[in-house]
Each structure stands twice: as structure tokens, then as C-alpha cells.
Amino acid sequence: MSGKTLIPVLGDQLSKNISSTYQQNRENCILLMMEVDEEATYVRHHKAKIAYILSAMRHHAKTLEAQGWLVDYVKLDDPDNSGSFSGEIARALERHHINEIRITEAGEWRIMAMIENWEDRFGLPVTICPDKRFIATHQDFDDWAAGKKQLRMEFFYREMRRKTGLLIDQDGKPEGDKWNYDSANRKPAKGKLSIPQPIRFQPDETTQEVLDMVADRFSDHPGSLDHFHFAVTRQDAEQQKRKFLDDALPRFGDYQDALLSGEPFLWHSILSPYLNSGLLDPMDLCREVAQRYHDQDVPLNAAEGFIRQIIGWREYVRGIYWREGPDYVDRNHLDAQRPLPAFYYTGDTDMHCMAEAIGQTLDLAYAHHIQRLMITGNFALIAGISPQAVHQWYLEVYADAYEWVELPNTLGMSQFADGGIIASKPYASSGNYINKMSDYCQNCRYDVKQRIGEDACPFNALYWDFLDRNQEKLRGNNRLAMPYRTWEWMESHTRDQIRKQAATFLDQLSKN
Ligand code: FAD
Ligand code: DLZ
Ligand code: SF4
Image (cartoon, rainbow, N blue to C red; front, side, top):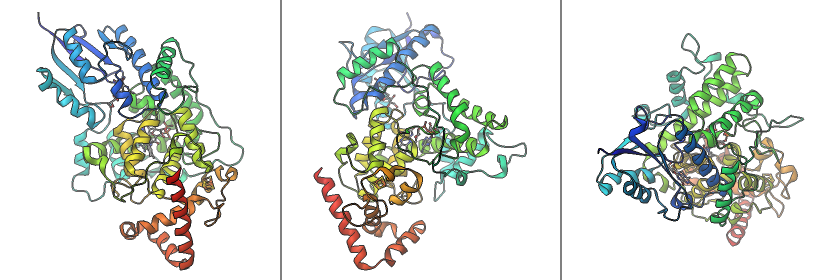
């Protein structure tokens, strides 16, 4: 009797179509889905992130079965569970007569290294299929990057617009004659605004079972399960998508960079966990957004701004991740060495902006982009926290975090640890930017206008001290010429006071 094909389906491969199952004869295949301890604990993922992924996997398995696939599903609390993907493949090979393994490439170097070892370990042919859920292949990105001194997202994004035809008019020109409407997208959310709220899904029986298991097994992991709100099926994710398109997309562009106390979602889509695990398809979503523009339901700055995040940033960071290789994670251009302050796991700090961003992260496993970049990321950058420690935190706490997307955003964009591959200058700012874009400072025990003294906003001294500390590496950056000139124009005794203020704060930080 000839054997079957074993097709492992990983937790972020929950899409309608993945290449490993494409054109396969269902009767000849066994789809293996594995809940394993190693994936939950290689970093201590947020409890809600684990619950989201496992519940979405369980629901997806039912859908696959209903479509006629044979699914072998291993639960985390199965007493024989070996705890790792490779261990579960070994056990599956004992249960079934298998003559070939097929798998869609994984989303990180760690798992790819594991898969590449399977052929030797199990003595069977292993076919690794490309992940076709992205617009650019690895080759496309490498071809675009070849020979370029700088890999700026904006130019890659234009290629992706041309490739997909999204918001391209009949003459092949960008809609509205401009590629990018970012300059129209920087409004603070001030005044009376009615803020749309995403749907909060009630856990069904399957999700409740997972929530109980996660609460029991991962009680020492960060985050709370009390506010669990995720969609765990494709239908519910689609419903959340429609809500976003109807309610939030029209003003997505205007308020993309805004920050507001007590408002974790603003006009953002909250769709990243679904896009990254496969419940939603990125191209379908972008086509719908473009259609809303063509139907005159949403303005161009909203449609373009949103599509840019997906076919621009999302594809671009993936390209960088695979191009830079497995040692990208070790880069530390600014030689930042401080440990991550304990309040990143509690939200217990007097800095109101940090308490808000961290608090909602621990509650919801979500923060929007500007919170990640300009609050928690900015603070870590100017305080000189080790980029590896910062990377670990972001990978742990966000429901949408997989290394291919999280690492370039954290280490590259936010911490400048790759020396400027992604960002042309560090995303460092004083309290002034935060005050301009948010209402956080109005409710803070610190005074955003002060640089020196007990009440001075810590971001202020840290910002100037960051520039001072990293002068050798950053002084030559044209985009920092202005702040460096301002620093040099300050009286030398003011500069000394700022250095001292920063040193006192950082000393205190290491004691907490
Ligand atoms: P929206 O604001 O509604 O944006 C729409 C979609 O665009 C997102 O769902 C996402 O798929 C995509 N997108 C937007 N910005 C980016 C970006 N910079 N990179 C990739 N995709 C983007 N995004 C992740 O998906 N996973 C991560 O682990 C992650 N880590 C980040 C870490 C840091 C330090 C920073 C600064 C950003 C990170 N991002 C990450 C990017 C971005 O913050 C999130 O995609 C976004 O906040 C998700 O919320 P949303 O769905 O409401 O996004
Ligand atoms: C993040 C995660 C977690 C917590 N648990 C599982 C799991 O039990 N089984 C699984 O297949 N995937 C899980 N994942 C997602 C994987 O870590 C992800 O598929 C790989 O990192 C490849 O990107
Ligand atoms: Fe944050 Fe400083 Fe504003 Fe306080 S004053 S909220 S610490 S930026």
C-alpha cells in the first residue's frame, strides 16, 4: 500500500489557500495541526496571543474537515504531546503510513532551520512550498534591492502599486497624481470626535476551553485574558473587516498618527492578527479598500494610506527580514545595553504615555503603530535599552507578532539597531512630539515643557542625552543636522544639566 503525504499546517497558515495543499488530492493527504509547548514558550507570549492562535487553529481544523480534508489535530493537553513541531512529526509518522512531507515555508528563520533538518532526521522527502500569500516573492524583493545603496520603503511601495494595479489610473499613473498622501495624515485627535469601536467577540465553547487551558498552563506569562476580544474564525474576522471599512477607514488617513488616552483603537483596523495568521487575505482587503475609494465612499488619503501599510510596509519588512538573514536579530548599531525596565510588564510608571501604551498592551495584546513606535519604542531607544530585550518584549506581547514582521519593525525601524537599513534616521523624540499628537501630557505627573528638575518630562533630557551619547554614529546623518545644531547652540552648562538629569533618571531606572 502506498503511503500518504503529511502536510503540517502551522498556526500562522490558517488561510483559505496555502501552497502546500494546492492541487493535492485530499484523500491522499493528512493535514497535521500541532499545538506545542515550545511555540508558546520560546518567548513568554502574552496569554491572549496564545489563546487567539490556538482557538483559531481549532476552528480552522473544523473548517478543513468540513471541506473533506483528513486532519490529525494534536492538542496541547494531550498527555503524549512531545512539546515540539519535530517531536510531533516523529509521532505522526508512527501513527500514519507516510511517504512524503509537504509544508508551506515558515515565517521565521528558527522554524525554517527546523524544517530543513526533517529530511535527514526522518529519511523522507520534504518539499518546502513558497508562501504565496504575499505580493512580493523573496526573489522579487532581492531583485528590487540588488545594487541599491538605500532600500527605501517608498520606492519598493511604488513597485508594488504597479505590480498590483491598486490605485493606478488608466494611464498607469498613481490616482490623484501622487504616490503618497502621508503629509495629509498627521492630525492629532483633538476636539469632539466620535471614535468608532471594533466588534468585541464573545468566546464560544471552543475558545472558552482554550482560555481555561491557557489560564492554567501559562499563568506566569504576561498579559490578561479578561479582555479577550479576538475573532477566531474567518467569518468573524470578515465581519470585523467590514466594520472597519464602514466606520473607521474614511478617517484612517487623517488620524493615523494620533494618540488619545483611554482610546486604544482610534481609526485603526485591528486586523493585523487576522492578516498574519491567515484568517484574512491582504490582497482581498486592499482591493476592497481601493473599491471604496472608486465608489467615493472614502477619500484618497485614507485608501492610499491604508494600502501603503499593507502592500508597502508589510511586504517591505518581510523582504528585509529574509534578505538580512538569521543574524539580523543580533545587530546593535548603537551598542545599547540596558535591560528592559520592569514596568514594561506591569505598566506601573508615572509616565502617563507609557502607562497607557503598556497598560492596554497587557490588557488587549494590541497597541497601534504610533504607540509602538513613538511611545514604548521611542522610550527604549532614547534610554539605551538593548534592542534584543526590546525585540523579545514586542514578540511576546502583541497578538500579531511573528518574527518576520516584528523584528524589522522593532530592531530596524524603532531601535535603529541595523544602522539605518530601514529608517533613514532614528525615530527618537522628546516629549514635545507626544504632546503635539496626544492628550497624554495633560494627565501626567511630569511637565512636558520642562527639561530639568524633579517634574521634568523624562523624554526631554533622554532625547538630548541620546543624541549626545551617540554623537559619533549619528552626527553625520543629514536628517539630524538641525537637532545637533540646536544641541551645540545650547549653553555648555545647560548641556551638562541635561546630561546629569538623564544620568539620574537612568540610574533610577536600573534600580527599579
Ligand atoms: P492599521 O494601522 O490598521 O494598519 C493596517 C495594516 O497595515 C496592519 O494590520 C498591518 O498588517 C499593516 N501594517 C501597518 N504598519 C505596518 C508595519 N510597519 N509593518 C508591517 N505591517 C504594517 N505589525 C505586525 O503585524 N506584527 C508585529 O509584530 C509588529 N510589530 C511592530 C513593532 C514595532 C516596534 C512597530 C513600530 C511596529 C510593529 N508592527 C507590527 C507594525 C504596526 O504597528 C502594526 O501592524 C499595527 O499596529 C497593527 O494594528 P492595526 O491592524 O490596527 O493596523
Ligand atoms: C505563536 C504560536 C503559538 C503560541 N503556538 C503555536 C502552536 O501551538 N502551534 C502552531 O502551529 N503554531 C503556534 N504558534 C505560531 C508559530 O509560532 C508560527 O507558526 C511559527 O512561528 C512560524 O511563523
Ligand atoms: Fe509622556 Fe512626558 Fe507627556 Fe508625561 S509629560 S505623558 S512622560 S511625554
